[in-house]
Amino acid sequence: IGDGANDVDMIQTAHVGVGIIGPEGVQAANAADYAIGRFRFLARLLLVHGRDNYRRMSKLIVYMFYKNICLVFAQFLFSVYTGWTGQKFYIELAAQTFNLVYTGPGIIALALFDRDCAPDTALRFP
Image 1 (cartoon, rainbow, N blue to C red):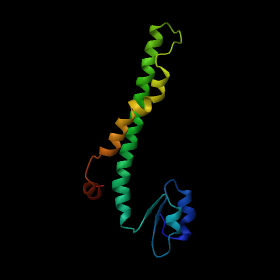
Image 2: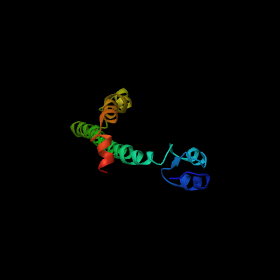
Image 3: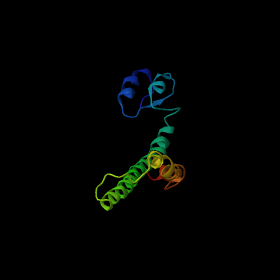
């Protein structure tokens, strides 16, 4: 987190850099991943948006493992049934559109509607 030109190297080295636009200029904000206008916006960025992002990414990782296990397990059972012949279970179109058509809407709905508490509650009880 930085607010001046002397913080640019630190912001670029960090995994996630936050630049604050202030009287020292906008160099830190230009070099940062996220730019905010005042220090008071930092609490909301970390406690509300950071919390939501952490929860959503955790659910996304679990969902990706689950959907890929289901995809591979069906192919495995079909291979056992056919005597390990190597015959395809999925047609090419199904394999290519699996992530987009079959599993995409669930992820989009999760990203849009998932919130465990109100932003005011997250700020009041971090």
